[in-house]
Length: 151
Image 1 (cartoon, rainbow, N blue to C red):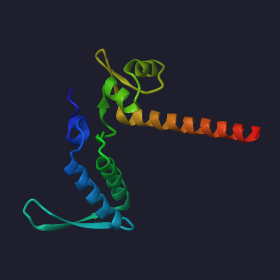
Image 2: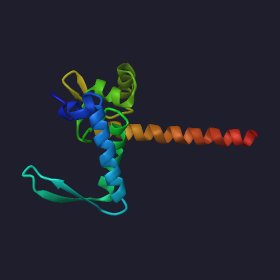
Image 3: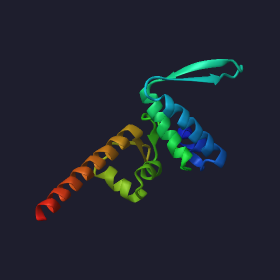
C-alpha cells in the first residue's frame, strides 16, 4: 500500500531557498487580499490569464502552509480519509511507535487491522490529537488557578 500524499512535494524534503522566497512572496500577496475573498490572477498552462477567487477559509489554509514553507519547514498534507501506518501515525503525534501501539491497544485511538498490520484513519488520529491538546490545556489552566490561589 503506497502513501502518495505523504511522499509528494515538500513533505519528503526541506524547501530550497528559492521555494522559501516564493512562498513568502505569495503569502504577502494573499495576506494583502485576505480581508475578503482574495482574487488572484494567474497564468494557465495555455499562458492565458485566469482569475481565481480564494475564500477566507482557503486563504487562511494557504497562508498557514506558505508560512511553514517560507520558514524552511517541510510540509505534508494528509487527507482525513487517509489510512496511516503505525509509524506514520507515531511521526504525526511525535511519539515513538511502541508508545502509539500502547495507545491503540488501550483503544484510545480507533484503528483497524489489515492482516497483521494496524492502520489508523488520519481523521481518528487528528481527533485524538485534538482531545489530547484540550486535556493538556485544561490541566494547565487548573495548575495556573492553583498557583494563583497559593499567591
